[in-house]
Length: 553
Image 1: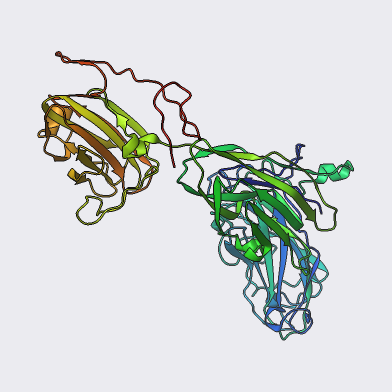
Image 2: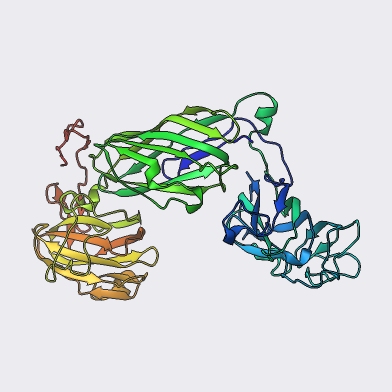
């Protein structure tokens, strides 16, 4: 067997794949058939408790509708060809890649050795169909399979269609189509002396579009190698974020040895840990080597595994977690190198690679020191809340941060140019736990207002003596702010539920608010000069835009 794989990150997407299109197939053969069905006396190659259990496999790749829960996808038919001296001993279970199970054949029923159960001269080429379809059993047999029937057919073949003994094919209703399907055959009389053989089994799906059984079939038949391509896409995060990268596999089958190195710039991203290794892969933390800005993976399947590593499409193989430690504007390449992929019974695959990239950005309005300056009674829409910025506000029971530390915040600063009332309303875009704090004077001053709308609510919050009259909404409001000319205020809106939900912010009132550093003509309505210098930030903290200079540490 040969293999083609694609490995990609969910955030930094890395793909391993062929460069050619694959022919459509409708079903795939069992990869380890034919195989013996031995009882406990005969099968001495396994531990005693496992001697009567025999697993057979088929692998499905590239089915486009890879979701058994979709109404257009299902298991349409299962075909099994086998022989056994004493069918009453036999149980068969079909197991999906997700682990769902339907018992096709059973129960264990010893019956009479001279009666209906003796099937040493009978062949079976039977189909199992969904409950919605019409089953067509062999003559004088029930529509639902049951071992306690007269299955004997001297030198003949049972070739009818049946409903499974326990469960229905419709019970395969979760998880992926692509991956490893297992037919588990159990000899229910481990002390007996009856054996058999599973010659083949296959599965047909309701929507097999895209299905292939051997992803490298065309290349092998043409005498050409499969070519692995490793590529990456660009992603942007803030310099204080932690992120776990999903390593996802696509079309990986019969892999005997998997090896690669990933490198990045450790002054930009700091490695934290590897987690959530998929249990069916066999990969453990001992297969990784960690050294500075490198992670090496070197995995070989156990010697007794003759099939190799097989994973369903889009399986998350493991997660690699990092913290961003660089400055705004930094970037790093995530590069795969020394990629080696061997498959069972074949040589190493050829590989190519293109690095992924990550840029560090920062939301300046997430900190008080770089709060967004308001110019008038503005209306602001924030699509998504991100994080607490460079400075995460922590507090005690008297600081107004006692409910929770700063989580996903936006800061706003406004000067009072003419005395009057200041009202505002915060409307969550979805259910989230929003709160706001108002500071007067400086960022480090005591908050003059602390207000929370509770968790998981889309209720409007804000300050207004009459929110219905001012904004046309009802909610949870504190009294209006009675502001005096010359005062300076800071407003922080914080999503303490940490779920990324955005909000709409609208100001109203009789006061004139703006930026005291700019010229304002106080008229009715006021005319405000809101033109500000251009500021360009870079990693050195210098300004190449001719305006003020900001540095970050």
